[in-house]
Length: 168
Image 1 (tube, rainbow, N blue to C red):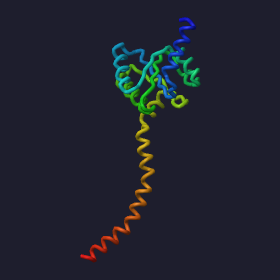
Image 2 (image 1 turned 60 degrees about the vertical axis):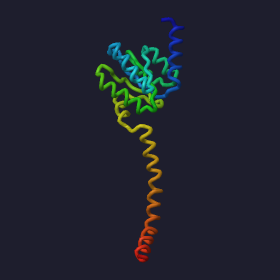
Image 3 (image 1 turned 180 degrees about the vertical axis):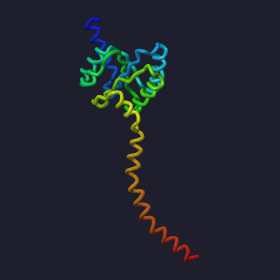
Image 4 (image 1 turned 90 degrees about the horizontal axis):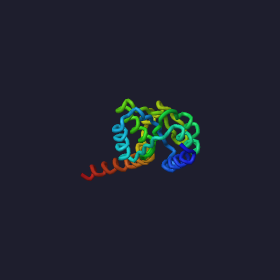
């Protein structure tokens, strides 16, 4: 492959990533064509993109993106996955598929500039997602106000019930 073609491929891959800072690398080289296409179709319905590239070109892409530590972990056939609403959802989908298809292996991930190995990706998939964390935060924010309201309403409610019982 000529240097011009490699440069064009690297530019296309960098453009495809669209500035994504959360990328998982998987090995799907042992899957049949039908399995790989089924996997791609299922993940594309969940807004997850898969792109298979040579590991040498993937290393160049990640060096250009400032993730040279992640680039050094890539060896052999590499399929890059990115997308979904957050990285936890992405890792959940990929680990779920790797459990369904035992010939699929998670290589690692680059999450917000940090490099994760395959075990760390599995741990990430077990953590709460963005929506779950936001709901927990909103609950924590509103709990003190609810408690204060209950405390303030307590004496007024008891006085009201006493007055009502006296009037009857």
